[in-house]
Image (cartoon, rainbow, N blue to C red; front, side, top):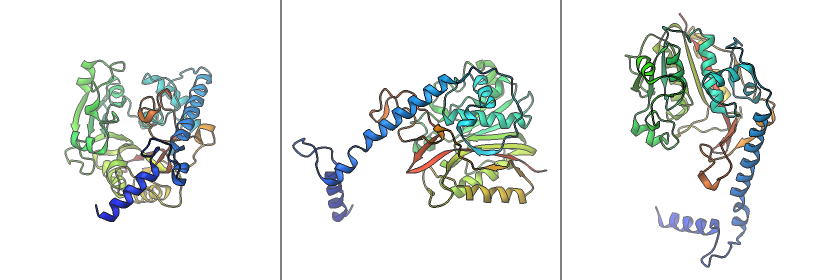
Length: 343
């Protein structure tokens, strides 16, 4: 670091410090502006999480009528989805209580897409990318579906922060979900593998379906993430289904994050990709970019998201509950893409 940069850094640290050298409140103008931001963030999270918990508790009892064909579109997570029968069914199927959280939506979205594609039956074969400790492989194994569950290498996961947030396969206490399947059945139907999503090996071929849950935004760039979606079709038989969820910047216009640890896709990226796949003879489920009109569609969570009970001094806030969140200052949500491979 140059002397000039060191001086600037020293000045900035002094301006932003909560107290001065005598432990008295720092009264400079810049600090007056920023010192309460963290408290405001915690207040917002507390009210948002409390509202989401109360809304979940107030939902009428649901009667699980089994899986239903709804004509799933390529779309973003919304409050109306979370309150639908189809999400309630899959939450019940994987033994998860109803909470307003986009991760539950992602699990339900993938399973709904696989159900509508006819893949949740014995004899089918599926390939999961970046699986981490998610319940999808265990649920599929319990249905008699063969699964190859893959993830980044341990080194790549540590570098990208997945181990720290318990999203990597190796970070799970056990590589299966005991309440969904026995260890014997899991080991019979599930194979664990390490795969670089930027270089899918040719040996992975002929699967009936493949999926990934918020993994492809960690491949280094928007271009790489879109290329992964297209390359994932090479692992499928003709007519197979690819279903992927990703981080979506809900602002259609303006800048977004690219060439970073986590990139943020926009409407224009997905529309261009869908057009390319259509020209290649594949079928992308219709794109729906509506962001929802519910009260929780307007609640934008802020970091820390993964465990607000302990991180960042946010003790007592409870489990995170959000459908949208701020990533590097951009409003984001989960977005699902369903592609049927052409013949």
